[in-house]
Each structure stands twice: as structure tokens, then as C-alpha cells.
Image 1 (cartoon, chains in turn red, blue):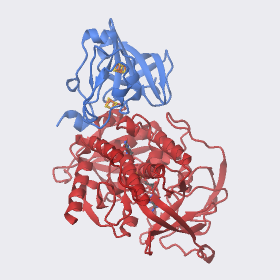
Image 2 (cartoon, protein in one colour; image 1 turned 120 degrees about the horizontal axis):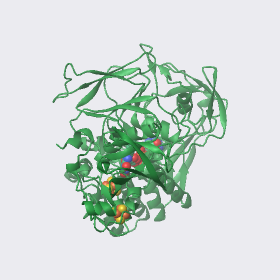
Image 3 (tube, helix red, strand yellow; image 1 turned 45 degrees about the vertical axis):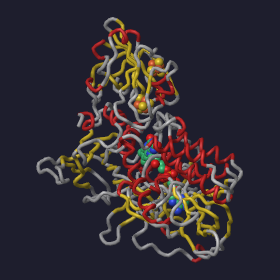
Image 4 (cartoon, chains in turn blue, yellow; image 1 turned 180 degrees about the vertical axis):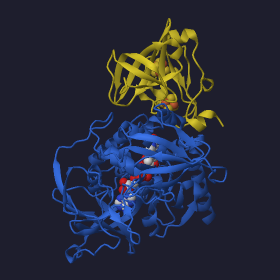
Length: 482
Length: 156
Ligand SMILES: Cc1cc2nc3c(=O)[nH]c(=O)nc-3n(C[C@H](O)[C@H](O)[C@H](O)COP(=O)(O)OP(=O)(O)OC[C@H]3O[C@@H](n4cnc5c(N)ncnc54)[C@H](O)[C@@H]3O)c2cc1C
Ligand code: SF4
Ligand code: SF4
């Protein structure tokens, strides 16, 4: 299932590693995660469900759900989708009730780090925020759970939209590389990878967080972080869809599929049914074709294709049918997806009898929207509201991206689902505002004004309506509070 | 609702086509018809043939200015720009192509229309790498000038 040749990417597979799944010997490569190596070996069942013993596989592929938990070298509940493979590692499928880890993994001595600004999340929003703040002379600690900086960008092989300032025409993977290089050059940015910020704690001054860093040997280190200000750039989670069979291995989030094939060079399957025709669904379909995976259909519940026509045209002229007003009825299969049934939907999303169709496929890819990640942020006490256009619950924030808790900022998809271009601008605004506050300097509003104007331009068209509306609603609710 | 919003397939009526004369010279045909926040094609053009008032505008091309250099084809993230040049009964169509294998000059490849339906074989006359995107020029009958928009190399 490994991709050998790819039109855009090269996969470096220099060092072969041996590992075990339930005692059986398998091979993977350095640079792969445990999940990716398992996939490459055709292993798609990672655990069994609590009550019915159903097979369970991975879903989100970016460490945000719990579908890929396995026992690794005796440590239960390891998120294998973001855990790098090491030579000789022993992986075990775990049942719903994982055993508690041995005591040697429990007693940690914490280390303490003080910084001016903590940036949680190293996607386009977090990277831009860290760079902007560092340029204004504050010390930044940048934390990301993944082994590589870049967030969603690291798997986006397509050229980006937007304007030249936001690097349009450049591929997402290349934007991530450029931002990474800039971060490396900044001496006042300290980066922690494979590290999760897990909790917000009360403390006298400043803000205080708990962080866990995963070591090479899968054991963990605990840190206590103190900062004057914090920017939450945690991104978003893939949405699930309710249908019979949605828990079968083979039903994956579009982001997870993209990560597997574009970051680790592993195909998710041979033939895919894509659910959702927004830009994510269209782009991932195109990338599946580039990885030499068949796309049977793209189904879309609404009467109209959701994403840009240019993206739809790219997959369409490769012969992939896009079925609007269609949905998935069920997925079937024993140990994994063997096919799906799709059908036409009427006005109120009811299935029109007699329109059902069988689709043979081994993978069903869900591209049905994202929900902002705010669980950690909500611990700070920042006021949260449900804003439909933002994709779910988000923190109220002002124009400077500061929430109702002073010194707590948000940026990017975590403050409302939009694009990398808007995420970078919001990151810059948050980084700039936080730096000025930390330095106690009077605001130089000129650069901020430019960033805001650019944001407005990007949100101006018909495809920017959602983002624009979300931010308008947030602004109204913010001013109602004052 | 436009048909392409349902199917992803444009029809000729959705486009503003060049004249016979302009086609002889060889010009860029831009199949980008929605207001999306994108403008690299405008920046890429050395003779300022593509214009837009703001980033969400639909790109408008001045076929008289366009020299058919192909810079915009290489940069367009939507892979929505094609070069079309006619000569007598034949047409040269340049297509942005991001799949493997990359064809060689002289190869015969399958032509596909906007639906991905096969339209017969054509000869590859030029292959140009522009970063990771390849621009492949095929030579075929003139009647395919506004029909063929993709190629398949594998089946050739
Ligand atoms: C298929 C696809 C195509 C797209 N195409 C485009 C496009 O053409 N143009 C465009 O502008 N946009 C595009 N986007 C959208 C764009 O990728 C996102 O809007 C953007 O990545 C959001 O950036 P972000 O920094 O907010 O979040 P992310 O990129 O998601 O980054 C968030 C990061 O935070 C980390 N994190 C979260 N919580 C914690 C924690 N507690 N501790 C440590 N780390 C944490 C995560 O691991 C992640 O790395 C596309 C998206 C997809 C999925
Ligand atoms: S082909 Fe060259 S001259 Fe014509 S619009 Fe494109 S960039 Fe401009
Ligand atoms: S670069 Fe391509 S997608 Fe972007 S506006 Fe120009 S033609 Fe449209």
C-alpha cells in the first residue's frame, strides 16, 4: 500500500525498521507513524469495541480523536497516528478497557518553563503568530503535538489560493517549509514538538498550563508552563456523519486520508467513495487520483457542489462523477468496508425510494466539515458561543483576536473554520497584539490595519460569506457584552 | 442554478471565447468562472493581459494583449487555464498536468473532455516542466479546440 512514485512528492524511505503487532513481525520505515506503518502492512483494525466487539480503525489521523489508541511498548492509550515508529517496538491492539500503565510510567517530575508568550498549535495560524510576536521582541514558546510543524499544511500538495501576500500559487507543503525556516531563524522562538498542552491551571500571576512531551522511547515528560499571554491556534477536528456501518475500519476523515497518503506515502485503500463536495472533498479526491487510488464517486447532499468550480473541474475531467443531492445510506463489510449504498435525497434530506445504488469500495472518506478545537481554550473561562457559520462553538474575541480573558488570544480554524490564508492573517494579528501588550507599548495601528484590510478582501466574495458572517456575529456578541 | 454547479462540467456558453484570429496567434483560455479569492494569474502575466479589480473578481483576459507565453497556466492553482493555438485544420492545446507517468514528446496519449470522456488519441508535441506541474502540449484536430481539456497517459 506504499506509494512508490508520486507526481508531486518524494518519500524518503532510507531506514527500514522492524516492529511487532500482537507478536507478529512487520516492517516499516523511519519517519512513519505507527498507524501509517500498520496501514502499509494492510493492518486496519486497531482495537475492538466495548460491547459488540466490533473492529475499530483510525479516523482523524491528526491526534484529535481516540480511534487509533493502542498499547505501545506496554503503554496503553497511545495515539498511534501521531506516534513515530521506532525499531523493535511492540504494538498491541487494545480492547475498550485498557490496563493502567505500570507505575514506572506514572511518577513524573515536572519541569517549569517561563515565557512571555505561549503559542499552542504550529499550523499556519500558530506559526504566523509566533513569527510576528518574535519580530516584536518577545520570547515565544511554540508547542505542537505532531512530529512536524505546519498543521494541516504539511499534507496539502495543491497550490494555494488567495493573494501573493498569503503565498497563493505556492503548494501548502512549501508554505509550511518556508514558515518552518523562518521560525528556525528566530532565536527567540523555542519549539516543542510531539508535545501536547493538556490543561489550564489557576495561578497567581500569568497563565499556567500543563504540557506533556513524548520522548523517543514513548515515555513522557511533564512540564509546567507559565506565560504572560497565550495564543490558541489549535485548529479543528473533522466531523463525523451518522449512518449504519460508520464505525467500520475503512471509514476515515478526509484529513486522515490526506495525512496518510501525502505525509507518509501510504494509500488508504484501492477505491474510495468521497462524501462531501466542499473544497476538502474535491481536493482530497484529486490527491487520491494523484496517488493512483480510484475515486468511485463524490456524493453531495446539497443540490449544489460546495467547493470551487475549478477544483470540481479538475476531478471531473479525470472522469470522477460528482453526484449532487445524493448521500450515503450505509457502509457494509465484515472486518472493514467492502462497499456502500448511496441514494438520492429530496428536499428535506429524505431518501427518495428506488434511487439506491450499490458502490463497491474499500474506503469511505468523510469530508463533511470541521469543528473548531476549543476544549482546552474553554478551560481558561473565555466566553464561548455557538456560531453556526464558524463551524460550532468558538470563543468570543475582539478585532485583535483577544478573548474575554485578558491575555488569551485565538487565531485560525480554532476561532472559526476558514482557510490557511485567513489563519495566517489572524495569527499575525494575534501575535502582534499579544506582543504589544506584553511589551506594554502603545499600539502602532498601521500594520494591524493592513492585516485587517487584507482579511476583509479575502472574505469579500461569495465563498467568504460564511467566514464573514461568523466574524460579524462574534463582533456583535462581543459588543453586546461591553 | 448553473449546470456546472451541479455537475462540475462547464459548457461553452459559460466562457468568453477568443476569435478565430486570436486563436491563430495562440492565447490562454481561462476556465475560471466564479468569484473566488484568488489572483496569481494576474501577477504572473508579463504583459498585463489578465485583469481583476479585486481579488474576488473573475479574471478577465484581453486576448489581443495575450502572447500565449503560458506563465499563467503554470501558476494557476485551479489548473483552470489552457493554451489554445490553431493552425489550419489542427489545434495545439497546452494542458496543466499533475499525474504520472509524464509523457514524452512523440507519445500518443488519450484525449479527455471536461467530463473525462475519451475523445481519441493525440500526439504530444511539447512537454514543459513548471515546478511540479507539467504543461503538456498536444496536437489534434481543430474541432477539439474547446473540447479536450485533459489527457490520460497510462492507457496510451
Ligand atoms: C484538504 C484541505 C484543503 C485546503 N485547501 C486550502 C487552500 O487551498 N487554501 C487555504 O487558504 N486553505 C486551505 N485549507 C484550509 C487550511 O488548511 C486550514 O484553514 C488551516 O490549516 C488552519 O490553520 P490553523 O493553524 O488554524 O490550524 P491547523 O493547521 O489545524 O493547525 C493546528 C495545530 O495545532 C496543534 N494542536 C492542537 N491542539 C494542541 C494542543 N493542545 N497541544 C499541542 N498542539 C496542539 C495541532 O496538532 C495542529 O498541528 C484546506 C484544508 C484542507 C483540509
Ligand atoms: S499566456 Fe502569458 S501573456 Fe497570455 S495571459 Fe497568460 S501569462 Fe499573460
Ligand atoms: S489563478 Fe487560476 S483559479 Fe486563480 S483566479 Fe486566476 S484563473 Fe482563477
